[in-house]
Length: 532
Ligand SMILES: Nc1ncnc2c1ncn2[C@@H]1O[C@H](COP(=O)(O)OP(=O)(O)O)[C@@H](O)[C@H]1O
Ligand SMILES: O=C(CO)[C@@H](O)[C@H](O)COP(=O)(O)O
Image (tube, rainbow, N blue to C red; front, top):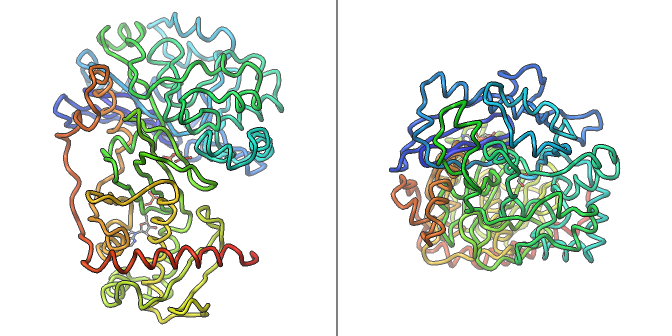
């Protein structure tokens, strides 16, 4: 998860395995960083990667008090490093998406009267009705997803309303599961927060609103009206709107920091708390994505997120409200067969050498003489298919390609798929479109060249490791100015620019526009095949 706090003088974020703070100055320079690793620095909680995987292998939770203690520890570390809390003008943050925190009846009074002589963990020890918060890796609520889709009039209709079909990790389904399986704990709950709004509540000394962007990852928010969907609320739990509170724009200033932090750490009373949001929305802010841009993370799995003006929610992928622009949306797609599949083909065709793999890409033509391949070592999320499927230029299925053709078919196929599914969610390539690439494989220039060609757009590289933290700092700064109408991109216009790495080949558009249509038809054929 990412619990991020901070801003213009600091920003911070929590990801699944750590809590991190990043502080920026008024010129957007990073001036301080601190972090707490959950597993190694809070070993009493016995987490792995910040979570507990339960014996059913489906339920995945994190101890909420571990997150609270991590904040105590982080702020103590900053104090020991003589960090100047008084200079912080605003803070914001991010948390892993979808995770939920259940506050026990009476917790709001506790939050309001925190005694600065004690740490938060001592003060909030009894404030949670559920000690183990469901997190994004949980997939134990399939039944509740089906129930919600049925109540909404089908999976497509649910996606139209909330931006996503029913997903197990989405908070509404987790809430429904808790209500059904642990009614006593549910009854003892006075407020439900997302991980992001939970962290904001600690700083505020009162319940923080869920922001529109992270709220879009719950299967509860109508992403167009930006109100809770009545149908979804009713299908999930009675009086749920009261437990959630009203959602607010992601740019909202929620109030001033609680007096607890003023007295215990020396924050200024005027330090503003700006809505916290999800880690992916915060990353979009940290990368300063602009309309038409698309970010492609080439890590263990590949993730694509993009700025969309006119979204078309679908059965795959997610549409969230934009965290930085009230008129816009962001779309997010996950592809499980990313770098590990590239490694597998590199091992088979290039002796495991990225240099040989890259040379094969250099030596083969754009469009691969019409050969197209689909490579799903494990069941893919987008689209739901498995296995390796190869087609020649006549659309006839073939059992093998030469090593060179195989390597190009893999990389072209992966990027055609990223483009196809992004376009299905409402993405379109515009004249100024930039592809922002990050993750392990973005160090490979030949892979980036194919990315550039398939999207017919220049590729820029960016180090994403801190993008959610940095995005939280930028958002904090923007929060101070948003009400006067200043746009987010204006606020961050002087931040360091990503580096342009590749430019599309002049024939790229002609080759890949046509190939994309063939690819879509062939993908349909793959999806219709019986699964092994
Ligand atoms: N030169 C390269 N060419 C292609 N892929 C690479 C190269 N260097 C590293 N990778 C891939 O990057 C992946 C790791 O990406 P990274 O973003 O660090 O992962 P994570 O998602 O775990 O953060 C590895 O699986 C590896 O296959
Ligand atoms: O579930 C999703 C997005 O829908 C995840 O991306 C979570 O937001 C967790 O983030 P990381 O721990 O991977 O940063």
